[in-house]
Length: 76
Picture (cartoon, one colour):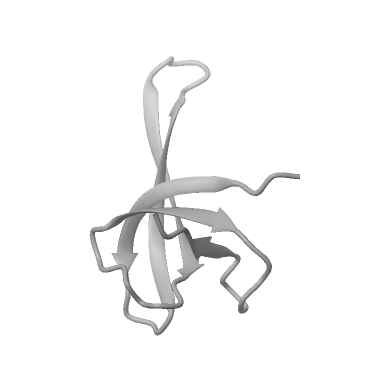
């Protein structure tokens, strides 16, 4: 099964080797037919600590690194 890849913005880099990435999705409301923005935060592993707040990054699913980290930052 392929690993999911999401794109988002780094919102926090306070922890070591970890960044918090906010991913925004746009969906259509089933009744009102209005476009709704939904966002979710993911904690991703950043081994080299290269990404800072505001950077656009791509994250990919991986094996659990810690209790809350199930994603890793792709280096492009």
